[in-house]
Length: 114
Image 1 (tube, rainbow, N blue to C red):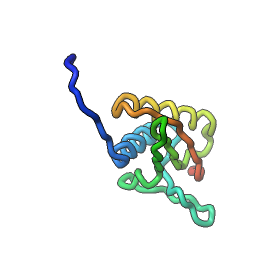
Image 2 (cartoon, rainbow, N blue to C red):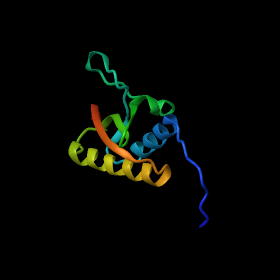
Image 3 (cartoon, rainbow, N blue to C red):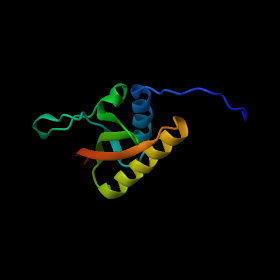
Image 4 (cartoon, rainbow, N blue to C red):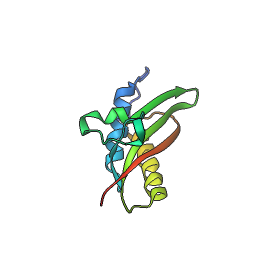
């Protein structure tokens, strides 16, 4: 489709959170999402239907800022997993929603395994 259509595209935060959540679960080493407000330092794995709860979006002048709360697999390199996660989310938002990105903060809420 090569013809240009005038107008504005508005993508809701819920849709962006779904895109981010699905991209996150495709990353090696990410076991699941965690709620941002962890009580008593016990991270609880959210079911797949609640992916959005592990993601906080903030609109800024430069675009959308993403805070994502994840639980990773025991024995994986945290730095490598978080870099892969940032790259995957950036690609997913750029490809699927064409949303300018202000930044991504990854919060590792727990480690699961063994």
